Image 1 (cartoon, rainbow, N blue to C red):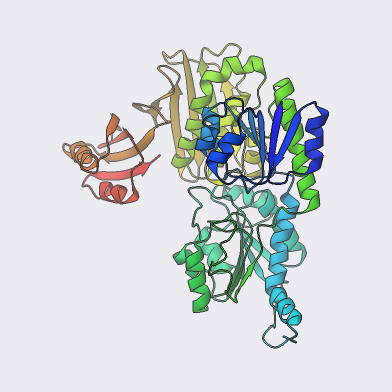
Image 2 (image 1 turned 135 degrees about the vertical axis):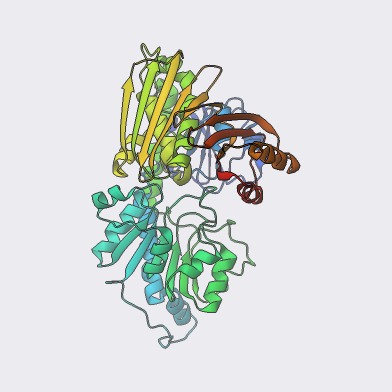
Length: 520
C-alpha cells in the first residue's frame, strides 16, 4: 500500500503506516488540482489537513485510491460526493483536535477583551501604549455560541467556568436537548441580539456560507465582538469590515478566512479592530499527534479487516452485511436529507423496514439515514456516531423490522415528529430508490433528484402555470407526480433537471393557487 501524506501530517501516524509495511511518501501542500491528480497516480491512501484541497477533477484518474484521510474534523476541502461516487472512503478524526480548537477560540476571546495583540505590537515598537487599551472583564458577559457540537460544547463548558453567561444556536438541536447540556437554546436572531460576544463553531456548508451576512451582523448588539475560529466563509468579510468601520461592532477575531492563505493585500490585514491568526485552531502538538494516530489506525483497520470507523460517507459494515444492505444505501442518504427539509428540528424518528427483510440488519442503514438527517447542514455527523449524536441532540430513534410491504418487495416507512407536527414518508427499492407516499398521499419520485415539493389549490390551471413558468426559465421537468389531499388541495413532487434559482422560486410562489413551494 502506498500512502501520500500532504500538509505536514504528524510523524506518529506515519510511523503506524510504516509499521504495517506500507510505503509512505510526504509532500508539501498541493494546491493545483492537476498536480494533485498526477501525484495520486498509484496511490492507495491520501492524507491531508486543510491546505491541500481535493476536488472532483483531482480524483478522476485516481484508480487505486481507496481512502482519503483528513487529519482533523472538517472535510469541506474534500469533494465527498465525488469520492463516494468513485468508491473512495473519506475518513476524518473529529475528536482529536476538539480541545485545541476550543482553547484557541477562548484565547482569541481573552485577547480581544484585553487588547493583547495591540499592546504587544506597541511595546515592541518602543511605545508604552496604555492609553486607549482599556479592556473588559469576561465574568458576567454573555457568550453566544453558534453551533453546539463537540467544539462548541467545550467552549460553552469552559466559558461558564470563568463565569460567563452562555447560550447557543443550533438549528438541528431541538429545544428538548438544551436542558441536557444546561445550555439555553435561542433562535439565531435572538442570540445575536442577546450576546456580548458571538463565537462560531459550525462547518462551512451551502447552508452556512455567509451565515453572518450584513443584516445579521447589524442584528448583533451594538458594541459586541465576533470570533470565527471555525471555517472561512461563515462571515461575510466585506460586511464585517463595514460594521466595524461604522462602530456597530467593537471588534472581531478571525482564525479562518474565505481565501486561505489570506492574500497579502487583503483589507482585513490592516484593520485596527481585527485580530487575525493564520488558521491555528488545531495547531497544537497534542492535537496533531492525536489526529494523525487516530486516523492511521482507522485506515489500517479499514484496509486490513474491512472495519469502518470514522468514515463520513460509509456506515459501519462487515463485508457480508454490505452485500445485503448495499441496495438500500442510496435510499437512506436521500431520505435523511429529505426528512430534515420536511422537519428541520425533529425530536422523534421511527423507521419500519417492511416486506422481504429476512437476514436484514437495519442498524447500519438507520445510522446512515440519521447521519444524513443530522449532518445535512452541520456536517459534523457520520454514520459511526449518528445514534450517539442523535441522543445528545434529544432525537429519539426507533426501528421496527417486519410487517406488510403493501405490495412491495421491500418498503421503508419513515415517521418524523417535531415541533411542527408529523411527516411520513414511504419509499421502496422497486425500480430503484423511490418515494411512493408522502404524508399518506400517493406519489412517485426519486428522492435523490433535484426536487420541488409543491402544495397547491386543487383547481384547473395551477399546474399549467407552474410548467409554463419553469419552461420559460429554461428548467426542464423530468417527472411530475401529483396527488390530491382530499381537502381541496393537492401535493406534487416535481423532478427538474437542475437546481431552481432563488429568484425563480420567488416567482413560482407568487403564482395564484400555490400554497407552498420548497426545493429539496
